[in-house]
Length: 322
Length: 266
Ligand SMILES: Nc1ncnc2c1ncn2[C@@H]1O[C@H](COP(=O)(O)OP(=O)(O)OP(=O)(O)O)[C@@H](O)[C@H]1O
Ligand SMILES: [Mg+2]
Image 1: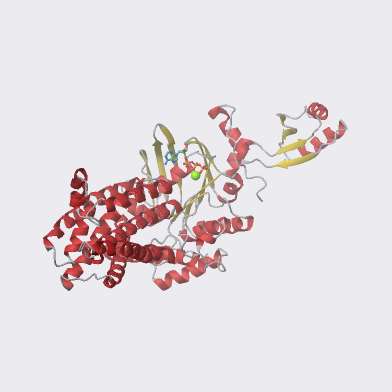
Image 2: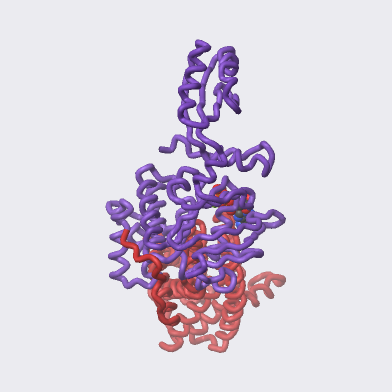
């Protein structure tokens, strides 16, 4: 097949005067994972809703498995499985009944659907809760049930809108493993996320959008190279000491002060000892020293600098989640 | 994961797929309809109303030569059908709120299967409510004087009216965003519609300015049709206005519901 599983070309969708998706183009090949990255309100869900026929694009085209979303929505629906941003299950039914329900709607037989439901409950660690009404599930359990529901009958394209939001680390790892396996088996997977580490762990390519526009696209490596390396954060509560530390670290490029923390960009890991030596040399003692890999926040600040001025959006970087 | 990826849902003949979808969707709806809470609405509630109305008014009206039990039974059937249509819209709103509705819209299911399953569900509920009320009303003197065919007609009019009402409420259920506002939209009109009709009081006892409203009310039309199909003293010609009303509402609100359905996003 010459055509990629998902082909989006100059997609545009406005709500009133405001363009939620503005001229977005990218593609996802079979057997690969593409991450759609962006802050709140960037237009991720709107792109997904256009792809899954919930919304009709104003202009531009989107083709999934060769079916155009505007002219052949039925063909699209038969080729795509979706997990929306918010869990979509019947709360009065048990987890098992939910999966059987979706299985039968996808034309499995009653017994086939039951067997598949049992398999998925097991796989998503829900066997014990399988016969409990989904309304009694915790947020994370509901999320897992929701994901299981999109895999009842595997289809060639899988679309996941923030699939790991609200999952604990173990469930998140399990989901990542599942996504990798599905891609290896030939599925084309598009997932949105606000977490660079997630896109990094899963996606061959990342498309970064903000205010409805694609502002960067590339492999995780390429994007991080744009951003630079890790930063070292030196926390010094005493203002006087902090001022002296700024002086001591004058040899480092781009040092910034954020509250009581000095943020020192690092070009390599060996710079850490240089930073510590510089502080030692000035007889300064830091309250805390931490090294952070670039976060989505950093990527974002770097990418949006010329895009919308110095004011970047404030959003969750996913730090402290693991 | 045992994922034989790249295998779409097996293509079944369209008609068969449609029937499968309606069956699976309706089964889920039935499960909900037969929950304790739902049965309270479709079975217990109408009976409670029946008890209240009968105990309160039958003695009073017996003095005036009115046999209250048989004449109020159709009215209470209509009231029960209204509750079914209201609950149907609330069920739709719940599915919208939980996102389930959107998930179904991304699946290879025809929207007509969704509508058909809902109509099938309200039809079954209407049959249950009507039968239960008719059985209990038997104790209060309600009889099908017009024979078994008319009794079946009674049931059919009840089902048809429920579908018409469900089409009306579905439009609201798909249009009004907040559940509270929806509940208000649904529950407010029901009592005026019921009371300002020939359901409890004959048209000529209403104040003059209200009489035209009473006479053209669809509720009056349906109540009169149900009376005609159960009571030998009224002619069966009075069934037609109800049928016209139901057909009109189903056509109009079927269209508005389909429109609202296409517009729903989240
Ligand atoms: N149905 C709608 N009506 C009006 N505006 C909408 C609608 N859906 C989305 N928007 C607007 O479109 C923009 C993009 O929203 P979208 O939900 O696509 O963002 P997102 O990237 O998914 O954000 P999040 O990370 O919060 O989920 C937002 O400004 C939002 O307010
Ligand atoms: Mg979103």
